[in-house]
Each structure stands twice: as structure tokens, then as C-alpha cells.
Image: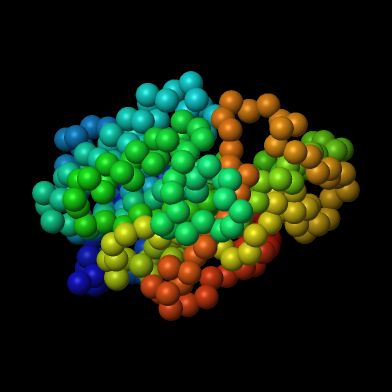
Length: 282
Ligand SMILES: NC(=O)c1ccc[n+]([C@@H]2O[C@H](COP(=O)([O-])OP(=O)(O)OC[C@H]3O[C@@H](n4cnc5c(N)ncnc54)[C@H](OP(=O)(O)O)[C@@H]3O)[C@@H](O)[C@H]2O)c1
């Protein structure tokens, strides 16, 4: 049973999601302990064992997240996102604890003409997605009690993300081109953190999709940001193919979040509500 005395280890607890999760856990009066680089390396088995033994529940937000970088550093991405996660699973299994692991929409190829449900077949199209899918699979093979929350299109105060990039470009350029053929759900890391805190007491198992409600293109998301900032920048729609990037990205990132809504028995906030709040705070 999870009580206020339950100690939660947050791996990757100084990253974009991890930082908001630490704050959220504290607001929910959970006892948290943070592990992250440079003191803690998830690839180090000894450090992993210490992290697991220090807590009752483990939340893994640590990951190699440079999507383009993973194309040239595939080995590193695999070590962090797959091998280390498999080892973490084995340690959690040995200590009979429960793990919540964060994964991504990038396990899918984005070719489905519908929102993805948890049982849809993954088929990653870049090295980052392949490494994250391998992590999910090794976790299942470890036999430990766990759940996987796949998230998408996240933004937060503590990291580089699409929202900050659009704001930055709007300040420095007269015209900004944004892709209108990638569709998903902008999702605040504060919202992910809040959902995780609601899930923790339930210690469910299996895969869950979570994103803020509603679907938009990157262009529509950028337009919302620009409109709220009231800047005069000229926003132009373009296609994914117009940009050169090392990694291919899925065009469809839509999630069906019915499973997590049923688990929590509550509605999910529409994407524009936390985004507007985030812009006001910035
Ligand atoms: N951002 C998105 O749009 C997005 C979308 C879908 C899913 N996700 C998933 O969400 C989770 C959280 O990512 P995020 O967005 O918060 O990214 P992030 O800010 O890059 O956070 C990842 C954290 O993991 C740490 N880390 C990297 N290598 C490590 C290692 N070897 N040992 C220990 N810690 C290590 C990073 O430290 P350094 O900063 O020092 O490298 C960072 O603190 C990840 O599982 C990611 O795959 C993110």
C-alpha cells in the first residue's frame, strides 16, 4: 500500500519531466529521493542497486532523449534506454518492488490512420524509438511488477522543447516555418507529473498512453503560442520533408488515452489549458 511514508526514487529526477515530478510528489506529500547524472549513471549496476534499495517505488524518467543524436550515438542510446532498463527491471524483480517507467510515442511508426491504443503494434522508425522499445521489451522480460506510461510532445520549464524553440524563433526571426503534417497532443510535464502522482497509489501493471486531450499539428500548436504572445512574426506552414533532420519522425503521434482515463476515473485536461498557463508563467 502506498502511504505518505512510501519513499519514491525518481531516476532522471533533474530532467524536464523528472524535475516537475519531484515538485508534484512533494505537493502530494510523497517522500522522494532523486537520482541523476553526474552522481548517478543508470548504466552502473551498483548505483542502480543502491537506488532501488533506497526506495519502495521507483519511477524511471532517466533516458537518452536526443532524437537526432541517437542516429549517430545509437550504442549510447541503447545502453541507457534499453540495457539499463532491463537491468533495472531485474533488480526491481529481485527486491519485489514496483517500477513506473516512462516511454514514448516514438515506439510507433506514425502510419496508423487513428489514435494509437496500447495494444497497437510498435514499429519505431528511428534509433531513439528503437532503443525505447527495446527498453520496454527488456522490462517485460525481467518479470518485475511494473507499468509503462508512454507520453508524447512534452514541454516543461526545465528543458529544451518545441514551445521554447517557437518562442525563441519568434523573438529573432520575421518568418517562422512550422510543419503541418505531424499531428499529436502537446502535453505539459506538470500534467504528466500530476497523473503519475495519481497513479502511484494504484501501482497498476501494463502499458498506458497519456497525453493532454485533443489533437493538433505542430503548425497549429505554434500558431496558438504566437497568438498568445501577440508577436508580429509571420508563421508559415510547411511539410516534414522541407526540413533536413538526422532522424525520421512519426507523422501520427495521436494517443487514445481511454485506458488511463478509466484507471483514474477522470477526464484529461485539453492541451490548450496547460499550454496557456505555461505561456503566462514564462
Ligand atoms: N521530451 C519529450 O517530448 C518526450 C516525449 C515522449 C517521451 N519522453 C520520455 O520522457 C522521459 C523523460 O524525458 P525528458 O523529456 O524529461 O528528457 P530529459 O530532460 O532529457 O530528461 C532525461 C534525464 O535523464 C538523464 N540521463 C541521461 N542519461 C542518463 C544516464 N546514463 N544515467 C542517469 N540519468 C541519465 C538526463 O541527464 P542529462 O540532462 O544530464 O543528460 C536527464 O536528467 C524519457 O523517458 C523520455 O524518453 C519525452
